[in-house]
Amino acid sequence: MDSPGKKMLESAQALIRKTAEKMKLDEEMVKRVVEPEFAHEFSLTINMDDGKKKVFRGWRIQHNCALGPYKGGIRFHPDTVREEVQALATLMSIKCAVAGLPYGGGKGGIAVDPKKLSKMELERLSRAFAARIAHVIGEDIDVPAPDVNTTPEIMSWMIDEYQKIKGYKSPATFTGKPVSMGGSLGRTEATGRGGLFVLQALLAKLNQKSKDSNDKFTVAVQGFGNVGYFFAKLAHEAGFKVVAVSDSKGGVYDKNGLDPVAVMDYKRKKGVVSGYGGKKVTNEELLILPVDVLVPAALENVIHEKNASKVKAKIILEMANGPLTEEAYENLSKKGVVIVPDVLANSGGVTVSYLEWVQGKAGYFWSEEEVNDKLKVMITRAFEAIWEKSLARKMPLKQAAFEVAIGRITAAMV
Ligand code: NAD
Image: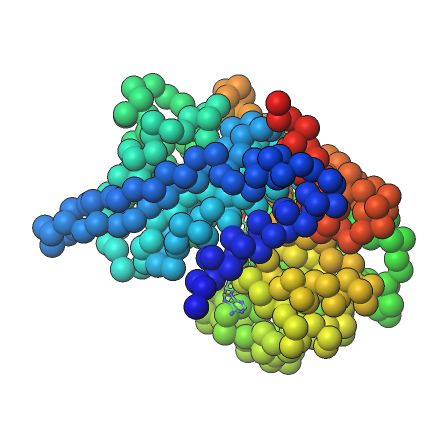
């Protein structure tokens, strides 16, 4: 059976091919947009705490640099395989182009369960990875960042290792660093905040009035981690009625609305959101609640052919990467549900990574308010271009996003 990573790669490449066909690109150009420019695959050997050596497999895949340096995170996960890293690098090229950033796409990964490593082992492995890729990255070549299971602290080890090897300071070579090491204010909340800006821009276009008695849009958010929590918190502050949230153990629903900060306080004490108040719901039930806006912000493929027909929301904001399968996407789009694709909805994170890079290169740092204002301008501009394309070509936002991205990438190729 094909691994999920292989399936992910096939689906990303199929989407690019389908879009390129509609755009009538010639076959050689299609190959240039589909195939990665470089694929670095290597082994990493570190000393474990018990004195034995252990070997890990790692990758840095640089997909396309037509628009600028490769950009993308590094993930540490036991299921990480080459195909998955390549798929994610490909989608980063699309996301950066959609977001209007002067970046191409890249991604890195190590097949490892970081929970099974001590802190010292994790640091040795992170440094070994940075040392392996040091000769192929750089602030104007390839700019890595955190992804699944990698943190600002891991970035600080990696940049320290990189700088030792290079012999000079180069803070813009990694983003997602701690603020004390040149990270940007506003980065932690950026993905959720960007999603909210996109949703507000969409509602302005749709000129919709909520049906809720208090004239507030009702929202259900699946996932209460970095993306889901900050989206829910900021949406609540902006006047949306967040009626449901969930984590991996289930969720809570209150049709009168929840305060995400209070739910997070509860989760910090009890470890879960379920039991906070209101009604307990499963993750499956949360997806089919009667709400205006559904925000999957946890895992991929949670809305699929079996549950898509039960979804009642008229707007879906894809804050997780790939939360809808292709079948679900097609079925719901045909029914008139407006689906904001992940490459646009969650691009606030990479946009503020870009702002971190700009600040690092300039050695001049903005206040959090300035960062948030710039994010708003940039992501709203990105939304406008996709919206206009979608209207002009009478196509759903996802297809429009791919057309805009591939148009920008190919226009920058000689
Ligand atoms: P996170 O690890 O901080 O949070 C994940 C959340 O999902 C947790 O609340 C967890 O309990 C919940 N979860 C796990 N399994 C679940 C399940 N089976 N059902 C429901 N909830 C479940 O991760 P994150 O950074 O918030 O990322 C969430 C998604 O957003 C991922 O798809 C990620 O790739 C994507 N994303 C994140 C960023 C970012 O800046 N963090 C940027 C772009 C995209």
